[in-house]
Length: 274
Ligand SMILES: Nc1ncnc2c1ncn2[C@@H]1O[C@H](COP(=O)(O)OP(=O)(O)OP(=O)(O)O)[C@@H](O)[C@H]1O
Image 1 (cartoon, rainbow, N blue to C red):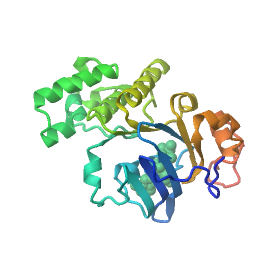
Image 2 (cartoon, rainbow, N blue to C red; image 1 turned 90 degrees about the vertical axis):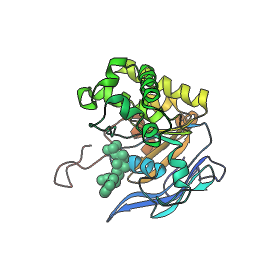
Image 3 (tube, rainbow, N blue to C red; image 1 turned 30 degrees about the horizontal axis):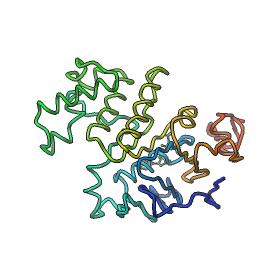
Image 4 (cartoon, rainbow, N blue to C red; image 1 turned 45 degrees about the horizontal axis):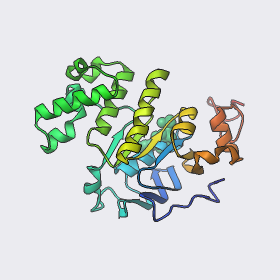
């Protein structure tokens, strides 16, 4: 069992991705408070937690959008704690990320969105990029026709899949996914999660996924981190969840309205959900 005061899974220096006592503040708001985790190369991890727990900020720190206020982020032994860290540039090319809001460019066609990094860097011709994008669209269950639409012409679930196609388009060593199945129907969610598992096992990609789907978190990922209010409340193998006896984790997994992570609602602090 892990609590903020007694972390059971301390960040190990042998991890491929190691976050060590990471703190990130936005003005007076502490989004990440002494967060540590460690993940081996080719392993998978699900991050769960209530709204505003710091899940997205953690992924944005790992991908290099935010620098650490204190603590360390190590990727493959390289210190990338700051946005300006010398190793950052090298890692930028080796991380694929799906953002919560997909972050697609409306000024570009779908295929250009998927391969914009390759086009920008000149590592593919436009023809190669188009073919690659169409192939990736097939992997996420979208037709070739959708390649030539604008993101704004797609449904929310289709946009999500384009975001996933873009995240995997460079065959990254690290895949960071912020709610990849949000807004998708159960059949499609299953398809996408199977694809993510395959990418991890066949390509050795190290995957961290934020998810609100507790079943997916338990069954599709080898490791789990549960966050609340900027802290890690539990981390470990998903095999150990049932023996965890951690009330924060139990409430999150069961989605019960009563428990330690019950939120205050409304303008008055005495209006509790429970
Ligand atoms: N760029 C930013 N500037 C200021 N505050 C921010 C910024 N990004 C995140 N925060 C704050 O950090 C906290 C954690 O946000 P984060 O997006 O990581 O939550 P989350 O766990 O991903 O929540 P959700 O599940 O609702 O998406 C929130 O209080 C949020 O308002």
